[in-house]
Each structure stands twice: as C-alpha cells, then as structure tokens.
Length: 141
Image 1: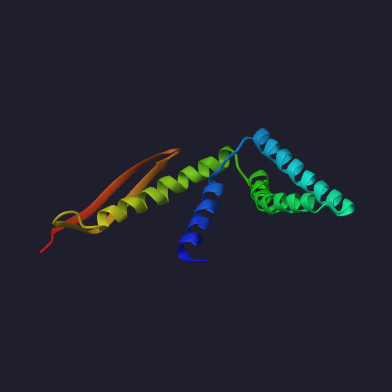
Image 2: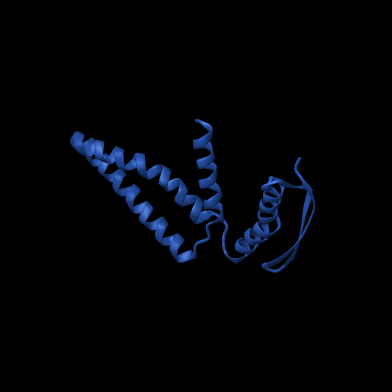
C-alpha cells in the first residue's frame, strides 16, 4: 500500500470512530446486513447443490462485497457511542485539534512576518472553549 491509500484508510477509520448513531439505526443496519449475507450464503449453497455456476459466481460476488461492509457494520453496531462519546470527541477537538491548527497557522510565514514561540492555552467549559494566543512577531529579513 502506498502512503496515500494508507492515509485514506486511516481517515476512514477516524471518521467511523467519530460516527454516532442511534440504537434503532444500528439495529436496522445490522438486520439489513445480516439478511444480505444470509441470502448470499443461501444462494451459494443452492448453487453448489444444483451445480449452477452463474448463481455460484453471483453469490461469491455478493459475499466478496458484503463481508468487508459487514465488518464495518459490526464496528458501527458494537462500537461505543452516545452522548458521552460525543462529549468526549468534542473535548478532543476543542483542546487538541483546534489549538494544533492555530499553532500550525501561526508557525507558517505570512508575507514578510513570522511568529516565534506561538502558544495556545485553551480553557474548556462543557462544550465551549476560550483560547489565549501568545506569540512574538519578528519581521523576516
């Protein structure tokens, strides 16, 4: 795998971890996925017993696509979620992701000015954050 596909895969895993679904949606997704996989297995068994190559190839194609999607569905259904998970993810975004993005922007040079030793101090109150920014400004030579 190249670096770009690894990054896309890790981005997908990160977004799936952040996804929060209600219980009824998780149940509905699981039922649809199970019905699809069981129908594909039934087609495969019926095709093998009756020596129907077209049905066997269709069942194998369904299983080839369905099994990886089934793993994602299992991760969604049995992954932890809910309001506690959402609050925890919000806290991570407010205290780590946003300050890192601000520091990255302050660390880059804009025009003929650069900022030295930029610091961001977040103050978190539930789902609201205040940020104190400090940096020294030096002109580029």
